[in-house]
Amino acid sequence: MSDAYYYSEDSTTIQGVDLPVTEIGTSSEIDTLADSATSLAHSAPDNFFITGLTVFILACFVGYYVVWRVTPALHSPLMGITNAISSVIIVGAIIAVGPIEGSGFSKFLGFLAVILASVNIFGGFIITRRMLHMFKKKGA
Amino acid sequence: MPMISGFAHLAASVLFILALRGLSHPETAQRGLTYGVVGMILAVVTTLYLPTVGSWGLTIVGVLVGGAIGAYIARKIEMTALPQLMAAFHSLVGLAAVLVASAAFSNPEAYGIGTSGDIAIVSLVEMALGVAIGAVTFTGSLIAWGKLQGTLSGKPFTFEGQHALNAALGFVLVTLIVMFCNSESGFLFFLIIMLALLMGVLMIIPIGGADMPVIVSMLNSYSGWAAAGIGFTLHNNLLIVTGALVGASGAILSYIMCKGMNRSFLNVVLGGFGGDAASGGSGDHGDRQAKIGSAEDAAFIMKSAGKVIIVPGYGMAVAQAQHVLREMVDALKEEGVEVKYAIHPVAGRMPGHMNVLLAEANVPYDEVFELEDINRDFAQADVVYVIGANDITNPSAKSDSSSPIYGMPVLDVEKAKTVLFVKRSLGSGYAGIDNPLFYADNTLMLLDDAKKMTENIVKALED
Image (cartoon, rainbow over all chains, first blue to last red; front, side, top):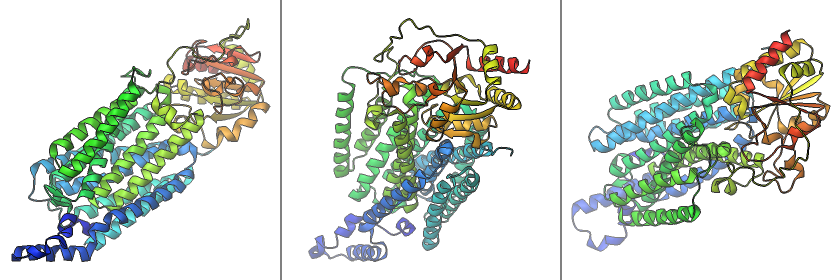
């Protein structure tokens, strides 16, 4: 899915494929169309919503079955781990910080988000580790 | 490279699933945690190698700063403060979601979702939803944190027309989102964020302190949905999978907590429960007087018992009595007494709160039992030692249909030969309900702070 990051996926441009056909004249417009056709062929961007939704629903089911099997004694560590992994949102923050050129504002927002998500990732994993270390069997 | 990072993100998703799977047993939990950490490293490193990510400097600085703060807090925090820590962490996920969605809105090119002023409508919908859920999670968690920390009163804050106001604001929020998707106006985007922030506050203030296990789980779930929403915006399957896992996990925990109180989720979320003095329930216990005992009495009774069951509650956490409780149990074991612990699903302020505190005090997890596994044992127990719990032992939940907690599953402590009930006063619990157990013939009330009383019992046992 990560090809999504660098092919243009703008669906309005793609819709442009059938709408302004009669007006095609300049070469730049043709280039744009060619570009969007390429991107269409590569990543079918319009369908990402369906792909994403499929992944989402299936993951909800996986989550449902996996979490029901978690022993109630470990519900607090479960919260710790889910808190840490939900900060995988850092991936989005890194993409905002990353571009060498581009808006300073979005970089700044991304930078703040990287800090917050890192607090959570480190904090969440470490507190979970602390909790799990305490759970011991009789005589252990 | 995109192929590689795609596979890496798939691998990270699988590792996250395995991380949760590991928690099915304390023995596999450590390995599960390792899977989670590896998955996270994989996700971050492959993202750094994406072609659009040109500079690493700021990211590395951010990770170091945030990581240091997170590591410091997680190492220093007291285990009793765990519920408020979780609430605080959830608020950060919410705020991070708001920031990422705003970054995507101001620089859509970096994410390949169009150009500024010309973002695909699907992306706008996802962005608006992600940012709204994130903002609600942020302020809602802050309020929950305040209530758990004691910075804000744990009492429900209600006012006339509260639900109508919330419904109206919800309607306005939906309208704003629709308008935003049509206009892509930055001002509307800002308004959506502000309104969602306000709604987060309004949603949590009417909810009482003792309902916090449900709320902390619910906010856990929201932080997941916010991450999934951002995943849709950024066309990133890893975020979607992780968000769905976290969302499902929080939702299941909320469900378990609601069931533990025999209340519907809606009933909890609408709030207002608890805090009102002595509403409903029969406060009428006739002329029966509670029997008040001393630490020496308690020590004597427990020493001569064969089987003792300990029932801990939030009061134990507040008094930090878990360590001295373990000492008491050790002393009893030396006398040849068999001791078990019984945990009610909503004991404490977050799911599994009591289990962690007992584990912290080195209580082996195989001596700790959940409600359905131990409820039958009370009839054979000689002594039940209730420390810092109240409503979860209230027999009127079974017998008195006018009681506000009627139908809630409770621990059958009254079936034991003797009940020792540690409590600061004869006052009612959070639900404002009188507990007939206080006046039962086989109950001995030990009126003191949970920690002090248990310390005195340990002294008496050693003499």
